[in-house]
Length: 175
Image 1 (cartoon, rainbow, N blue to C red):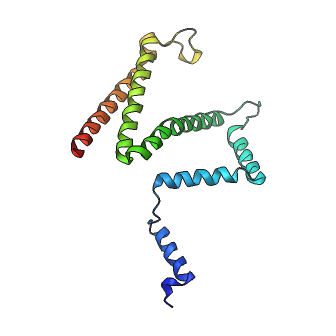
Image 2 (cartoon, rainbow, N blue to C red):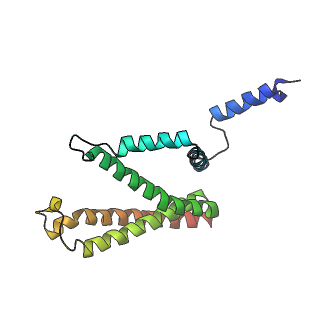
Image 3 (tube, rainbow, N blue to C red):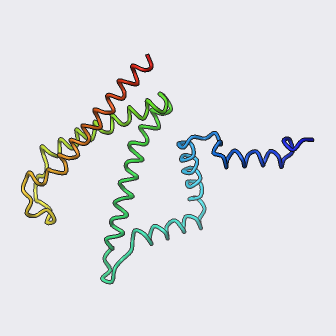
């Protein structure tokens, strides 16, 4: 019996495939598998307790006066932003990926995301801010408050046009 057909030989081949990066799974499939594993582990009480303790240690740090620290607030904001991007943009990409393929899904998702950013930031430039101004922005005039939104509008418009041109080129190449 050759080494290839023994259980040890099969195991060695599998280890080599995984080690060499030939597992046959795309990055998206690996991320999905990791999400499923984390979801299943969250049903186990000790693991869920460890996740809760880690959350409290990172997001509920308090200083000497009992106030939540700036670090905890910053990490919470970064996590919320990343989660929102993954949830909203990632879901659209995943649906397109399953229907039109990886490259076309990336181009459509990029065009849609930056098109939405152009519209959203343009609305902010035109209509915001209204009402009482936050104290941290005291001293800024109406134009100065809109500079970040104007920069986002211009940057998003450039990227939107780039994605539209890439979509056009992709369409011409496939014909």
